[in-house]
Length: 371
Image 1: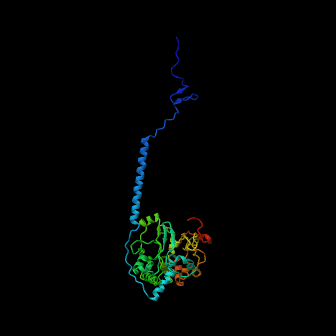
Image 2: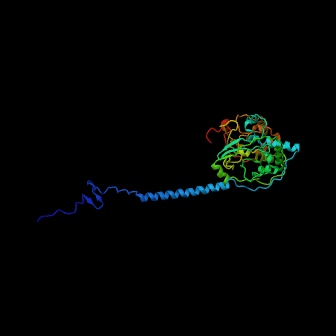
Image 3: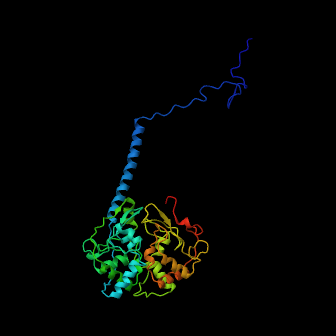
């Protein structure tokens, strides 16, 4: 009787889980599945999705553009300022002191072609035109002389007062928030207007601002006039007190505007008050940048923390010592001893904070890296 071969292979050759060690695997076991062909239907679906996405983005972009166009020249209402220029010699003299001294108006509004004379301590026409290159565009300051076509001659006293106090132009549009005069006492604001009215006219048409795309968005959605922070006093008589020093530092000389870090896109503070660290480009040495010092009484980081009052006053009397410095030394050196003492007494009262350039290194006020 013939025995037949078993129909099942040996368990050594295979098992339920796959080929045994030493056996040759089936060719089909590791075969790669054929790729799905991308036919015309799939390409059409992809094109439809991309087209839909592009359409949505286009609609969003168009809506954003329309919103910016509709809002960038929006107007604001602001209270009328019922102040009038005076011809009184004492009032005009007070205005001249504020404008050429602590207010340092020529730093921005002085004639661009006479900045060297300004840096040397000479008075120059406030005919405007200085350019400021900011992240939001190129901005040019206006002519403050009494010229009726290109200066303030075409504005009323109330118009000028409203610009300085509320940051609103005669046509209702907002000014950039970089002038600190909203809280000037009524008598000081009157004195400033009176002095500006006394200036001889200089016919100098200042070019309009060049606002970039970011600047237009900021104008449309960020910039808004703020006005005074509180009740404006009718008068703020000069006195050698910390209170009057605070008035000078915040409302006239704008110490806080440079010695506090601010966002150049909005003008909003982003650092501690008078803590320094603001990077400012020189107006007389293009490309050279400075870092403003910490003015608080912090012992390690405050640059003037150890200065007695007489040293503080004497330093201002020296004027400009570091070439290219953006500090308006030649305006501030004209401040009275009493005002400088008041300022020093106020700076002794502010909150001490760390930070800013290192006072132990005299060159730390130079910004060497990109900003």
